[in-house]
Length: 191
Image 1 (cartoon, rainbow, N blue to C red):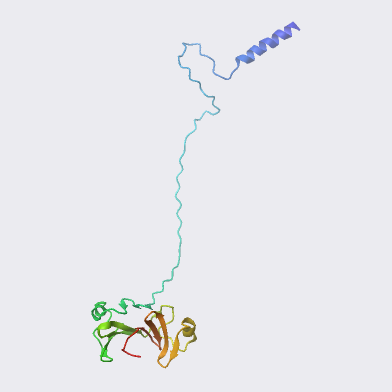
Image 2: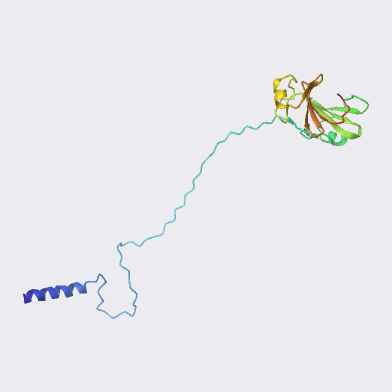
């Protein structure tokens, strides 16, 4: 049994000597004491930067309504209250085509679709658009005053002998009569 104990003791010493670290070189000793981490691969890891660009095309159809609007303040560049000179300077009207009363001159749109009425020192008091536009609420300006859409759109208005009148802002009204007039309170050009 003594032999077996000696063999096991020698084997134990041999195992203690196996550490996985490289054996000390038998050459001249190195003064460096840096430890080297064990490696499981023969290829050093490399940092890789991946750059990608994604391009997508979006197709969208946009419907743009280019219908002119007779708003509560005017028609395009023609505004209620502007002076005679400002009206002519827009380039949208020519010289007055008629005088409807002692106080009012009528300027026809060069497009032929309406007129602007200038009253003495008050400026543009009425704008009448006959076709090719809508009111601010989306009704065609040439709508009949008896069309049911008129009363639904303007429930506070009144039907009268000259059309359907509705106040749209303080001192400003629409008169729908197969064309639409935008008028300022106090206009004396027509009734």
